[in-house]
Image (tube, helix red, strand yellow):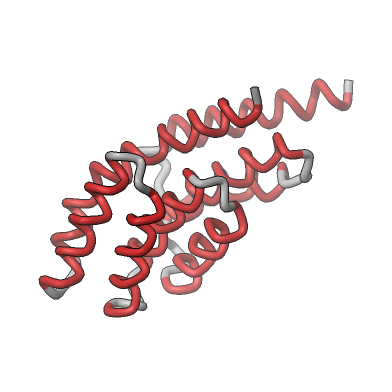
Length: 161
């Protein structure tokens, strides 16, 4: 049950990432990076996440300072349940761009997902969702972030009983 819920969360996350590839692609310089993003998108849409990771890793070798590439690759790692690698990419994106709101949102979702494995990451998830809402209160993930906060707080209240 836990894995199926996590897989659903990962798939829900991949749809906006795949849709956002074209917007991100326009921001990146270099036709090779654009080609690699296109390939990664094709691989992600056919659940070939390892191939997408390879493409995005190559893109990061060309454009290592691009936080969006780290987020995209983190999403692929999340789909493969590679929590540590996903977290490393989200953290790298935030090191490059400390006010990158989407990185806080996706890292918060990762922390919320990890909660189901028994690791206590609730405070980290809450902090990231709150930070996302501070940065972009009307952002594309604002409603979802607010819902995650409410769900996490409700779960905590139930535990405190």
